[in-house]
Length: 180
Image (tube, rainbow, N blue to C red; front, side):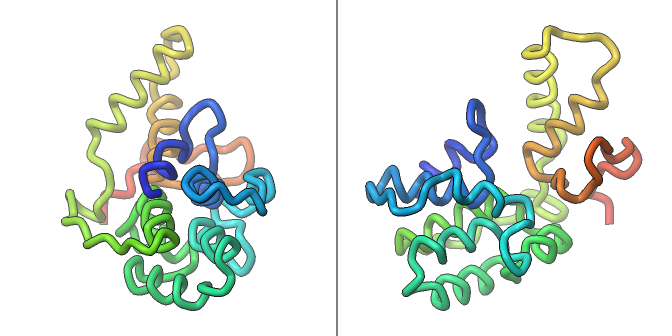
């Protein structure tokens, strides 16, 4: 189920959020259509009720009889149930939350992966590759390299768009969360 969730998380064409991705995977694997993907659109990017991570919120909505068990296992692995706390700790990407919630929902617990670097954040290589891809998709415009870099970071969830007021982007100086 994890693979199904990660396949659609923030990927074109639908760019599903964390909650929607977990539900999508559940629907694909189990065929359960009781909850629609659109119903969980408001639950992504730290907007789930009580500030819960959208991925665990979706898992609890799908399996309400297992909600306490799911929450306990999720918090034990990721350090919190709350999106802002998980992001502030800089230990797990949003994709990690999606993957773990999907695994828990499927009844499969994965072993923790070793850290790739400081804060277990992506290195510059995947950011650069994604920024280049965005640049190419937009017709190779001149002078928008910083915008494309920040967009790539957002898609890799180094920062979340809900951290900033509408229409604003972090400056190039504040964008790097790898610094202590």
